[in-house]
Picture 1 (tube, rainbow, N blue to C red):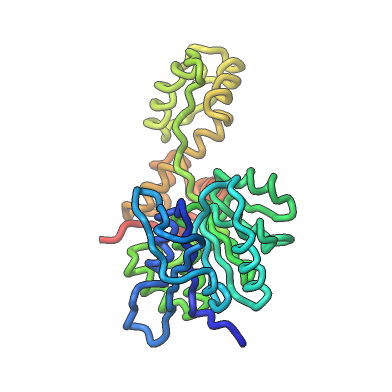
Picture 2: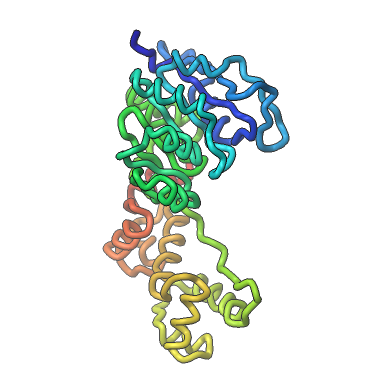
Length: 325
């Protein structure tokens, strides 16, 4: 008998990732009387409850793993540990469901469960960028894409860290019900209606590292980085930055890479992109003015570096991310 794709089984387990779980409840479990056809959500317990979830709460699920034998859509909302093996009973259920044509989705670290079940062999997949290397090393038969929001391989869809599960869920809703319905759901969630799966994960600027021993070059570099962020419209060269740091250009370039993990030129361009992001999200400046204020000088360089850093265009980013009154 053909499985009903609108019948969604959402896994709950001890050590549950609360946010990833809640995202799926919000997408597929709310009553939506404005639509003639919608999903029915069935929360399935991996173990006997009550199940502990992050944040000190507990969950009692009304269904067992038997629901995975009926559902046409199965979701693994994260997993309790990268090195924690999934129970064989769960893996067997997932393999059988996949063979029956069920759609199987994972959020964040949930991709490790799909990979352990062999459902990602020979396929592309993604997970949180922090876990991508570990996944690639543990499952070499999987092509891990570390810088995308989600990967749709037909009946297997994986998403990146936490909130990317929203993008994956809206993508599936769009597949099932069309763009108009997906846009209504996105509006209710107050999120952008569509971010393409191939768009890069928007990783916030990392904290500038300070070496464990508190080496003076790391501490001395921090004020310079702050000065550079405040003067991105100016032309900065290795020579001019080295003079500010009171170092020779060669020494400065070496120590800059040690502290930031990249070259001065690349660091400046990424910071300019970050500044442009904020301007695009919160204002009505033309792209030419955004480029000028961010230090790119012109739209062509803005587009070039925006695409290189974020994998999308300034115009597409503005449409998706600008603030709405």
